[in-house]
Length: 230
Ligand SMILES: C[S@@+](CC[C@H](N)C(=O)[O-])C[C@H]1O[C@@H](n2cnc3c(N)ncnc32)[C@H](O)[C@@H]1O
Image (cartoon, rainbow, N blue to C red):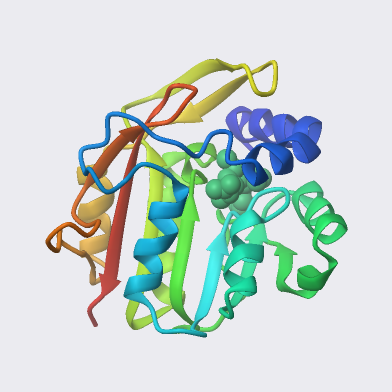
């Protein structure tokens, strides 16, 4: 494991319960300076994904986090969703807070091949996860694996922090420093295009294309919706 990954694991181990509280309360889920006027919060993000997928479809949250807010939310809305996270603490906190989805969350490291067959999912979401994965693993394993488990025609919602190198900020909601690896949207899009996963363009006022925005930390992010074409 790299120092970078150990550092992020230590943060989530220390703050697993607090992370679940912060996400449940949407404390860091309201956005500013969005390049798309329809993106103001995580509710908008979920709303757009729901427009792109069929009711009850099968999904994966890759890096679901402590409490797995999104797995619980999509499951509550009738989707057949599962979540994975590298940290045992993320899964323990989720099972404690949401025993109804205990068998839907499990430990898996996105730097390794995923324990799912090809074409398993109608949708995959991965929000704020590759910020903790080294670039080599992201491009050689994590991104190709997300494409592999997505069925043809399936939708990927991908959100990551934008820039180059690693940035450390003090996060007042945790009273602690956090470090994040930053990514270039063009490079991510190019890699995914090579795997036949293409950006869904802007559709009238609906979210699409490459959307940049700032969270309350403040950190700059990119959100893209993509479709596996073949
Ligand atoms: C910022 S949280 C995001 C959680 C959730 N996606 C959300 O939007 O709230 C990042 C999560 O990624 C997980 N993570 C970091 N490295 C990982 C890896 N290599 N494989 C799987 N999960 C990882 C961490 O344990 C943490 O739960």
